[in-house]
Image (cartoon, rainbow, N blue to C red; front, side):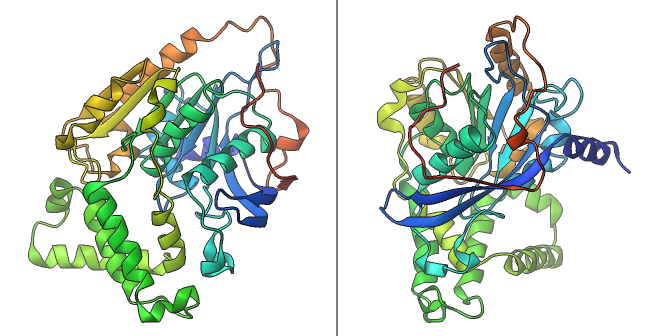
Amino acid sequence: MTAALLLLLAAAAQGDTGSFVLRNFRFASGEVLPELRIHYRTLGQPRRDAAHVVRNAVLILHGTGGSGRQFLSPLFAGELYGPGQPLDTTTHYLILPDNVGHGRSSKPSDGLHARFPRYRYEDMVAAQYRLVRDGLHVNHLSLVMGTSMGCMHSWLWAERYPDAMDGVVPLACLPTQIAGRNRMWRRMLSAGIRSDPDWRSGEYTSEPPSLRAALELLFVTGSSPLQLQRAAPTRDSADAYVARWLETRLADTDANDLVYQVEASADYDPSPDLERVAVPVLAINSADDFINPPELGLMERLIRRVKQGRYVLIPISDTTRGHGTHTVAAAWKAYFAPFVASLERAQPAPPGGQPGHRSRRASTAGRQREVPAASGSRLPAG
């Protein structure tokens, strides 16, 4: 058994898993879902100061098509969660939700298919907020970070809940509306599935052929030419590589889920309110990211509007993985670790709280949490 696997097992043993149910959740579209289930994992224990403010909670948000489970991989957890590492699970309380439409949270493939409410990023962030505040009873976050779609969510958190966190780390995105090629490939993917006669308005009995083309497009947008050339340096190896990848993805991807996931970004645009971001921000992109190509120069212009914003562009290397560099923590940990340390140094010194305190309701593994529909828009002030 490897050291990385031992680390992950130890971290998982410190945590919890469950589902938080929001009753009569109203989406921005006006649609209402009687029960919206948000699945989550936590690692570590929340620690409160004398005023009962949680001081060590970190919310980690996944990308399109992913789940919180991806942050248990050695590429991420093995670099961040161990003793003395930036998110050491003996000193931090990590919250890893499955977002709306993903993983084990409520999604179209559960049964509603294309009758599932049209969720957008603002709905996903609102559900995350309710999980943190009402499901886990966390009244303050030390850090909000996210990858790809989760990166975009972290920008929305910084604007909508400016008092809820100490800092933000968006990984692999831009804080502006999705346009240009990034918008075009998303549009082609969803239109390709929706126009497929075998999609049958979402009521298919077997996955439509267009799903394969959609996944092929995702493969191109999210991959790294350098790494693929090394992994498949011959014609035969390249053919075999992509065949294996497609076989795996086709087995665990639902066309309705994918369409909803991609379309959720349609109205994302935090750019008008960047001046509202009051906390420190460390934005990280990589130079080999097809989805957020650095030659556009957008981040350099936008980050100037963030009062305490810093932008780091990771150069192409043996470590980077294209858009997927966001989950390869070794590529950016040298910037991330001191940023997290600076946030923790800036926290008020606890005069005698009770480390490890947890409400009884948030500590029972595997239990569903049920609350009424949301009200309010901000974590309780500490």
